[in-house]
Image (cartoon, rainbow, N blue to C red):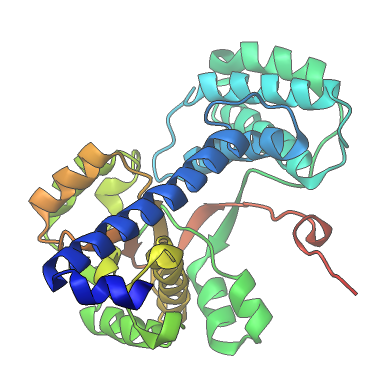
Length: 336
């Protein structure tokens, strides 16, 4: 029947019908994505299970860790975030979840580090209200969360002489860079190494835009708005994209983000291997932000922006967020 219809219809009409059918399928699949995101994310639903609540706790305590790892930490920063975090932790406790969970203990450690920073700096008075509320929540100290100090020599020694697992564990997001300029050759070598990242059918859709110009960087930061406190310390900015032109069909509608994300992580490890400090700036942007950045940088309309990477040379000594990881049993499901 299909073949008979094809014989009687002109090719231009067949092409049009095919286009409409594909359009219908795409709309159907994106509607499926939309419903799942609304239903299971915390965008429009309450924090009614462990994963949703834990996700918000991690996001909040990491803001504190990031703030403590900046080059010039402001006294009293993020008080609203700290109070919100304590509220979330109280909710977590009231719902009967495990208080020895590493995510909960990391939140405890982050707040402890926040309070200790102000005590050491003789600025205890400005966070006295937080200290009083926190005492009611917790009585045990936590070894997790907060920041830790690393030296450049210590880190580069691990990179040069380490086993594979030591190399992976020695990489941190850095927000406090030295004033020394990066060697462009090392960046190029890192991008070349990252090209070994796997991609669907070896299509290699990833692209890297390198921004040296400080004025251009500032324009991008103004659009991004996620680099407060350390943007002025960044030596160079990289933008990672993935080109939609390399994908086809409804089943590949999200593949550019997968391939782009794999390339991103490969590049971060390659930069680490080359002795370059880095910090990923997520591009969880609105459509307005996406349009604006394309007016500043000549990125093709067909390319999805995956993330930005702030890079620079390591200082002799600097602080990084501890960013503790979940227990393996939380993420690894072994079907035997």
